[in-house]
Length: 347
Image (cartoon, rainbow, N blue to C red; front, side, top):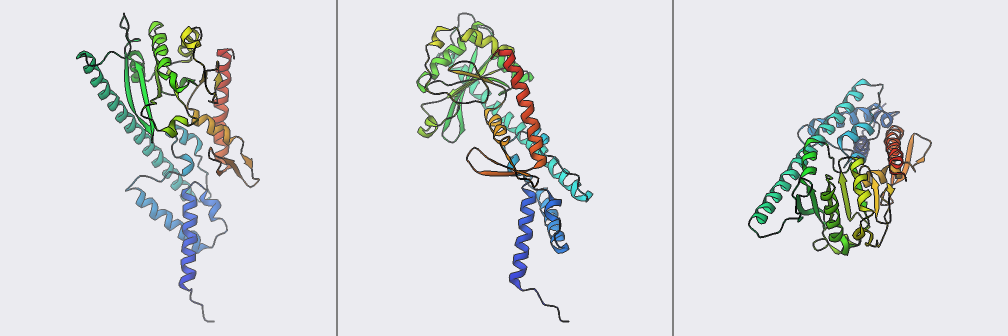
């Protein structure tokens, strides 16, 4: 019997299929599930391709599956569950891939934080010199200078077309350096009209200074930000605290402040937290993370070990059972923390 030689077109189609499987595995799908039932030629091609890409990855940034991009390393570690495959070599390879990603993300985040801190320190030194030379007034005028009344300011672009003013008093800077104040951990969002951003800024600094509260906050820079950014349904003003107790102490004074009460909101966004009044909403952690977890919890069980949900742009995303269960644990932890905070606030 004469064997039939494969045509170039057939070979190309087979290679394309192998590459498709490799890309799916790199995107986070289980290697064992994809290779189940495939001919040995496909399995060996996929394994060889993965090995070649793994070697190449050692020389460059590791490939991060789309569903984990933008997440902090600790959260990636929690939600990226590695299956124990029948083939121990595949399990070992997947665990090594995850470890490289975690190391890369941690190092990248660490460097980004150091760069940001250096940029802030440079701006603060320039600001101090301007005040000393009489070129500019202090950020906050106070008859008694304390670590709570001495504010520093940074201005910069956080996203394309989005410029922000960022403030923190000396005490907040001290606590951030020691790790006691984490940006985004304990925060109150404010739905303030764009015309009242500076008005609220002055109230926030006064309340923090007069009541010895460490605080770091930011608000949109209306003059520099693009028209599209100013009309976007996004955060405009957010305050950060070292603890829930400080946040409560701050708000207890703020809610009775006449100037604060005079501000009339022009919208009310859902920050996935605890609504305090028409302007303010408390939440722990980042709004984007809370919103993403809530969307994932609406996922449809496809009955084949996968789940489908829509992201914030309406695009359908499919994730595996292990990913869904890991994210559900994060969601449950978030809800438990929220329930406890709701009791603290009495809301």
